[in-house]
View 1 (cartoon, protein in one colour):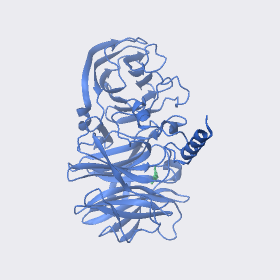
View 2 (view 1 turned 120 degrees about the vertical axis):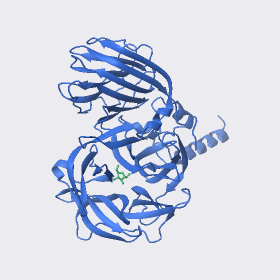
View 3 (view 1 turned 90 degrees about the vertical axis):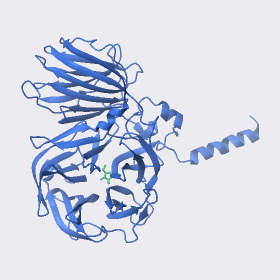
Length: 492
Ligand code: DQQ
């Protein structure tokens, strides 16, 4: 090596060391590597690279759906909180747009944190938390591309004077009887999580009304992040993220107070957090949630985080929520396979030989018969060394997602999260399982959701099967579709 060449190499090395890494101190990950990554979802929304967490500012305006999201533009770890932005005609195919809100003002330089979006007479108005520490701010746009932060920010300069709070963030805003209402996620020290209610005529001048609800810290945690509060049927639904899996409450909202009548878990998979609800132009109540990673050193991949599919929420006859993937998702379905009336003996296998893949939509109706547990196996290697089981446990009355064998690699989580599911006598198990590489979203009988992240190590971990233990079950029908990527034929 000549001295001049070695000097050039040293200079290049110095430049490389100085360049900001895209993965939080790791080697930058190229676009080609990201495209080849077998764990990067193909039909769940995610940014081109780097970190993403909460969905923000969900809205349908002038026919188009917009998603904003907590994003770190310069690394695959949490930080530099910025609102990323994408647009869609169907909530399924997305087109990335320039980032909307940057942490560039004295009142938000610590981060543009989570919030919502409202349509103020045709002017899109983002209501978000600026960190300086936590204050509520607004930004407006007429074309959804140029965003202007309000000169009078912050519109709420801090928590109510004298109140000792555990946090003060993630505003949710709606209009009722001509008046803007806002609840801010918070917690009263020593008491519990709370939503603080404010009202305004113009989104700029806000009056504090009081806590709309105060929880018990021992039951629902000391702080409620990301509240979403909406009418649902003849009730109201409140969804909160209390530093553990999100909780819903259904109840009545009268005289500025919310009285919960029922409470439950939104998704106990362990990787679904900070969901945000919105009503679209057809008045459907829709929820997106942040799908967290579940493996060590996830930042090495150069990306972290995906959004769930849009989940349409309705109120069941028992006044509890029902969840279904938005029907728009069905547009991604391609090649189809079906089996019918399959008797599944305990511990048998090989029932669905014609169906393989790691981007699948599965719809199954299973009569549990005498089985103790019954359900589906996905992402199975031919020798069964890698497999993920999704099943109903009759005795425990639970829906289980068993990922103890999902990967032969030790880095991913190995556990079996579960959620309550009780089938009425004679009621079949109706499973919708959406497999998208490292994401599995499960809907059971439209009333229990379980989202898993899995990271199979083997390229042949693509098998699908049915199984039963303790007795036989009958698979009345199982439909499987290969799912298309949302990026190849992006519409907007
Ligand atoms: N994420 C945001 C906060 C919110 C939290 C910061 C929930 O606004 O409370 O990235 O994941």
